[in-house]
Picture: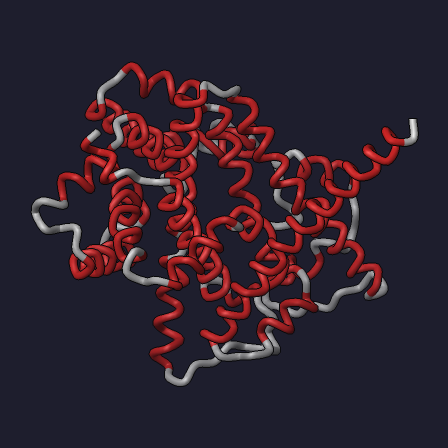
Length: 379
């Protein structure tokens, strides 16, 4: 009962997803200049402004670890509280993915047809310019089930998240049997094995067949601790560790906005200049505690981030089409030129498109129900 005061609520989770999607958009806008329209380079008032946005863009990669941690946290609570069918979580993920897939992939091919089947090289990474030049059924099906990401490179995350969801029953059983200390050691050991040991032992030189395996890339060999962060989220959910962390910090005066700014700045500096993604399993829980604390002091800004969090799945799946793969929308977004204005327009366009996808399918669903009722009334 005492922990209820410090509960990490559904709104807290949504808020962190909103922050994660803001970081993701910053990462893809400011971290990959070779994928942007070359004729419309972004500018800033000062050179320092470009340097700062570049740092934020690099730091934004932590969004993957944030989504993984929050996914593990939410999945474990959902699974244990509701005793729900584990497969329904995978089904829900696919439905979210296909909602965007069946809108934006056809648009990509349609735009190519409208252009006469030819798209000039508008960015330095020329592969991006020709993603929708040709249609191959095998490629389409591989992307449809999420084991390839040819139509959108940023969809690699779908395959990784799908893999950890598929492994979730095993993870949940391991966590249930062990204490927090042992579970944390297992997570750290898995991270070390997947990032450093397995890539060396199971190299392409000795096991060439593994290199092309989707499951191998998603779970066995990783360049950052994404699956470990999902696992860590499950561990924190099982023992209510976010609540316990808040409870432990509060009496000491460490749940304070000034401390929050110091901690979040410290995490940024450590990740960018000292120890990188390797410590995401520790960075992200502290971000959850202190970012939500700061958000409570931000009034309307908190409402904005919450709303973005509610649309975070759609925004994650579609935003890179708008800035990389669709030349027409990329030109519009980049036309404002200034780095911060481009970012604001990018966020607004991604949010509007996400709402549009939901609105379209909602309208189709209402239309289907209406037709069924009409048919029933005439029989």
